[in-house]
Length: 199
Image (cartoon, rainbow, N blue to C red; front, top):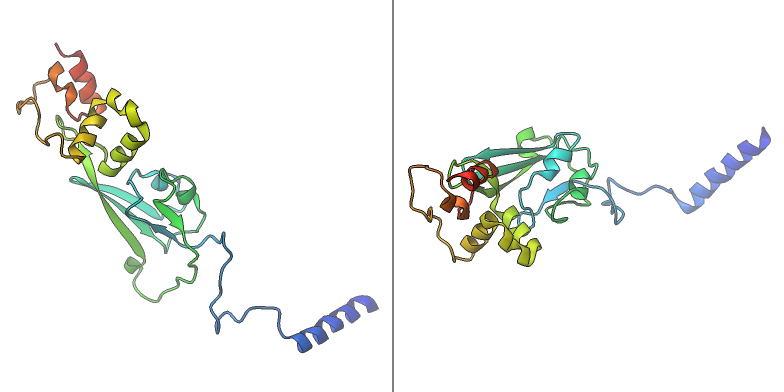
């Protein structure tokens, strides 16, 4: 029983001479380690609005809703557990990334503890259903390279972004009548299937 007491006494004397082992956090800012998992942050230029982060968030701290032709992604750091699943499953690997910021306690309203971004949606030229965010389709088009020409909807969005195709319906049919000529429009999978089998 004597040895543990002597060891503790040695530690106490060492601490008195050399000072405390702990950091002076309240008085000096703490610098986290390089791979520290802090508050996630959306990077609007790199985010394509795919919603992968929403699907993998265990705390449901990221919400997604479509309003008209806009997709809204809302990150609430008052619910976040900093698990890093959003960053690990991000399509572009840069759309949402963990920062080194951890001291985010606040006495303000919970509604202020959020980050929101908006992404333009591509809608079906025939039925108006949501296909995907505009930025996501452009990202996929760049990834496909020459294979882009095998998908007419993706090719059409790519050409529209460069000003080489018009936003209007190329057939000029507003009646919604389905025919094979409409396959070159930007269509959702259901309308594309219907157009492929139309006479």
